Structures are given as C-alpha cells and as structure tokens.
Length: 217
Length: 387
Image 1 (tube, rainbow over the protein chains, first blue to last red):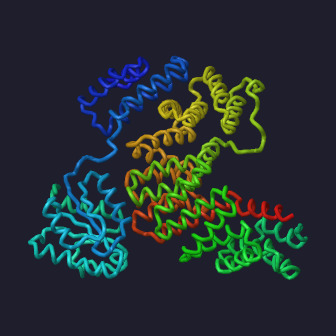
Image 2: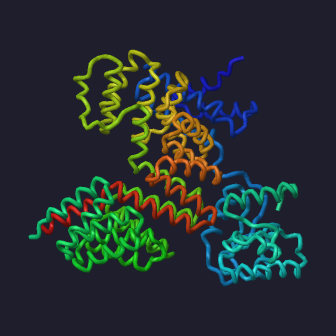
Image 3: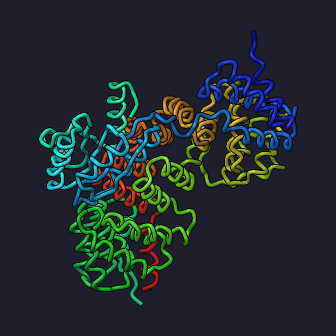
C-alpha cells in the first residue's frame, strides 16, 4: 500500500490550506507516526514534491512561495520539540560558599534544563546549609556543588556533613571544578559520589543515576 | 618626509613573501644603518610574532612605539604578542585601547579589546566592546563569535548556537565552501552578461554559478529557470537554486528544491550542503542537520567546513565530545579556520577548560588578523603617512 499522506500534505501546501495540512499531520500522528518521525516521514517527502512541482513548472513562483509560507506555519507540528520532555528529575546546583565562579555551573545548568531536567540553580557563594534546605524543599535527590579554588573545594566536605546531620544520606552529591578534575581523590575525600567534568559529563551522570533509580525526583 | 630605505624595502618584500629568516636578517641590516626607524622595529615585531617569539615581538613593538607613539601597526603587533604570550591581560587591555584611539575606525581593535576584557573576566566591558565593533561593521564575524561565546557562558549552548551559526554566515568561508563543492573558484574574471550566455545547459549553469558568486541572484535564477525548463531533473541546477533561496532567507524553498535534487541524485554534494544549511536554520532539526553534514564530511573528508557544520549540529544535540572531535579534525585540516577555533573554544568551555578555550580564541584572533592582512594594511598606511 502506498503512503499518500505526503501527497496530501503537498496538496494542502499548494492549496494554501494550513488547516488541511494540520489535519493530514494529525491523521498521520493518530495512525502511529511518532512526533520525532513526522518530519522525515511526512514533511520532507511533501517538501520534495513541492520542489519537484516548482522545478517542472507545475506551480509558478508565487504559488511556490505561498506554499512555503504554509509549510512554515505548520513546521512546529512536525519538528521534534526543541527542549526535551520533562524527565521529572530535579537537580540542585550551586557554587560553594566564598567561591564566585559561575561559568561552568551556568553552562551545565542550561544543558540539564535543555535535556528536560528540573534545575534549581542556587547561584554562587552558597552556604552548605542552603544546599540541604533547598534539597528538602524541592525533593531533589541530585546535588552538584561547584568549586574552582582549592580552599572552597576542600570545604565541600561540609555539604556532605550537613546532609548526614540532616538525615539525608540518600542525596547524591556530585562535585565539579578544576581542583576535582585535577585530583580525583579530593572528591572522595569530601564525600562526593562523583566528579562532573563539564556539561556532557553532568548529563551522563544524571542519566545514569536516574536509570539506576527508575526515574523521578 | 622620510622615504623607506632600500634595505627596509628589501626586508618588507621578504616579509610579505613569508621568507621569515632572510627578512629578519634584512631588518637587522636595516637597523645597523638606522636604528631609529620604527618601521624596521615593527616589521621585526611581526616577524617574531610569526615565529612565536612573543617576548622578542613585544620588545620590538615597544621600541617602535617609543620611537613613534602613533605607530598603529606596532600597537597591533604588541597587542597580539601580549595576547598570545598569555598572562598579560592588563597590558593587553591598555594596548588595544590605545590602538582603538590611534585608529578609531579599526573594527578589529574593538574586537581585540573585547577579547582582552573577556580574558581578564570583565564580561560586561567585553560585550560593550564587541557591540562597538558591530556598530562599526555589522558584518564583523569575530565580534559575533565572541558574543556567542559570552551567551554560552551566561545562558548555555541552546542560546549560543544560533549566534555561532549567524557569525558563521557572516564569515565568507561558508559560501566559498559551497562554490568549492561546485568546482567554482574566483578566477578574477567577471561573470558573463546573461544575454551573452550560450543556450546550452553547461554554459548556463556555469554562468549561473558565476553570477551567484558575484551575488547577482536574480540573473542566476533566470538562467536556472531556463535549464529547468529543458530538464526539470537537473540536480545541480536545483542545488544552485536552493543556495540562491538560502541566500534570500527563503529556507523552506531551499529545503524543497534541495530535497528534490537529492531525490534525483543523492550524489550531489551542493544539494547535500543546501539541505544541511536549511536544516541548521530550523530549531529542532539538529539531528537531521547532523545526519546531512555527517554525510557531507564523509563525501569531502579533506575539507574543513563540513566538519565544522557537523560539529555545530552536534553542539545543538549536546553531544559535545563528538563535536570536539569534529572541530579538532577541522582545525587539523585548516589551522587558520577561525570558526572552528571559536567552536572548539565553546566545547572547551562546556568542559570547564577555560585556559584551553582562551587559547583557541587567541589563535583565532591571530589567524583572523592574518587573513585580513591587517598588519600590512596598517603598515602600508603608516609608511605612506610618513612619506
């Protein structure tokens, strides 16, 4: 059986009928084509037909342009979402007390958000007690503490102590920053569960933890 | 009036041809005749810089400035030497400030000043300097790359990536790449008048590419139409049509004709490029763009540009490690590729590798000023001003 959906979508384009185009897309969706596949399986073949019609003169320049406008209007229906779906995982991050380095943290926070995680960014110069308080408030189970100075890196142990004192040994504590990347044993020393080495590393570690715990906060 | 001596002219000639060692020798010979000529010192400074002798370059440029505080090429050389040597941010900021005063319309001075500010962690001042550069020239790609890096630091890759791509489009190397794929190079000859083009497919296509190269898009489209009227399945003509649509920001039209071209022949690299570039303009299509540019990088593995385009799509997918490999390949193929250097800097920032990121930005600055021939422009202006 041939799939005539791209032809119908193409027809909707050249008829300058966005409602009809959306109807074709919705039908395709209800027939089981996943959102992530709509572009490749439906939109791209329809656009190829459109390009062919322009090339062989079946439609004139004006119709081609108008059809492209309709294609523009319905693009959001066929493209994968720009941000990932909410994973339900809350990640708390901040830079250690007396440390004002933010770049690494900000880049990682944005990457985690884009991956669909709920990110609570506590900013810079965060006191150890605040990590615990906000973890309790938000239900976060993953905490990333940044420290770029040797002194502040050592003081991350106070965050772990605070978690222990608060009865929150279940919290996963990751550390990040130059001192931890340079000396892996320092992470163990301060009671961390692992070292985040940049945004991609954070994404992987959070995914690993989430997979291990079956998702959720 | 102080005309250039024969010895200075000899040193200059050798330096312009890239004969570094004989040029240095000629400079020392010129200094034996007249050690108070700032031109010779500034030449020496540029030569030392080319050889990565930063301290010597700093000394020679400083001497030139002492001899003449209006010696603009010496400020350029000194600033670049400070930046490349590293750890001299205060001096660097001062020098670029001076150059911006000596040559206020010099866009690069503002860009460099911004980079010096950024290296010293004065982010707001840096952004101001890059905006000033864009105020002087809205097409200044390096200022845009820097603003994209600044956006990355504050708001992450999703916000920064469109900036990298916009900057890349300002950079003529992306268009050059498209024409290189088609085998079209700047031979200095003017594009033909469409009326004079022979009525056969190859003549028309060749003329259409030449007209497109000269940005006469409407005449190029007219010729493409004539080709398609005779054969609507001409994939190369369709690919050029797609490029012309892209240049006019008609992304869907470009995508449609590129998809049609590839339906006819998958082995049309120009169409692959157009399709990838159209995908890259759509948020959410990074996966498609990565697939297309990945294929292009395989088809033309020795060209740096497809690796960079692939890397940018991978950044959009947050696959930073893979993006790094693609950027490294691009830099390996073309160490002077400014866009690849900035991209690599962005990846290093995502890894928390600030020093390496700034190193890449400094390398980009050096190659960008070389590519522009900025030293020689300032040098010639200065020498002519003296004469």
